[in-house]
Image (cartoon, rainbow, N blue to C red; front, side, top):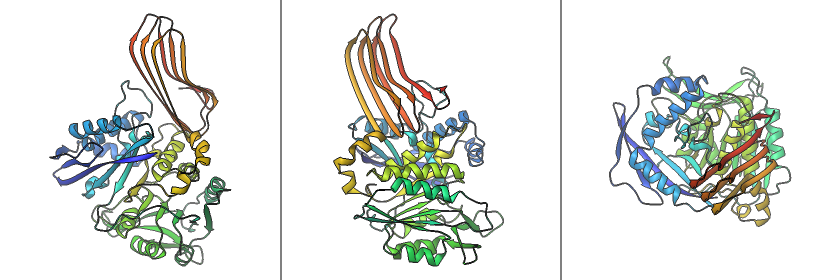
Length: 458
């Protein structure tokens, strides 16, 4: 999928108000910014979100509040018009340029636009829409660079488990990454256990991509926990804690030539309340690394593993970073955990113009059947429907992102339109859009009939 940039800049924070403007879109740019305010109830919802104690209804309310701030009326109108202008092979990339710390630390990945019919479902969150990618862009006077790699790509996967921290299931993460990339000759993987600063620099020489699996966090400089710097927590030779500060990590990876970084550690995607470059992922952008996937809050081990597994499965068939991150979010969502908010924890920082790491693989027609299993689009147009119309009917649909559109002029008496019938959806999301001009008596319209694992119906 080709993504088109829709760039939003947020600036000039003052007393809880700031300006928002579209500086680039498929249509045009805004002449004047819109002034928006932070709602007073936002802070409470943010605290509950970070503590993972937010109810589904409150999460949607938080998402609406975020949408009201980032997508005020004119911006929202341009957004919807830009989405409508896309062809079926294109997506919209919300490239966020956030000039103030108070704006940059907000969890924009939970933006929610209410669907036509409000339901207790995840649909409406933009980060879960396969045609929308949310990217954080750091505006600095350095060329954005490219994430594109010459084959074979060298990927370094490093694991660190200092004895002072709770044990992580790093063996499972290694197994899933190895399985996802098994037989992919275009990627050479080097696994490094008990990662130290010295092993990191040695392994990353000439590497295109680094995946870090382990703990991370902030090294606070005051009791108020407002000022500090991010770090990934490596091991020393005895297996004890050896923090690697953000600046040292950034300059090490820049010297090694790393272009893409996956940070599985908690809080690697956020900053302190004082320094713009205190966070791990922002600091990587500052030294010119084109892209990083990081975590803005703590993330449960099982969710991190599910995300990484789908992320690398997507990359292995030539999908972009944008698509791989969305696939990872859906993998977290479809674990079936109630009140799960983990899908919004990963963030994509990217300054490059596109997220295609493997241009040759993306253009390889031999991989298209595999990509097809990741994303299916069906469009049906009927002037008058008198019997039954089904968009897609599947027994089992593993790892699927499916979009079904039905446009019907007249749904006559006795006519029945069904967007999708799926017996089992292992991991994925299904969108069904049905447009009907007139429904006659007895006409039946069903968007999705879906049987979830465990014989639960949604």
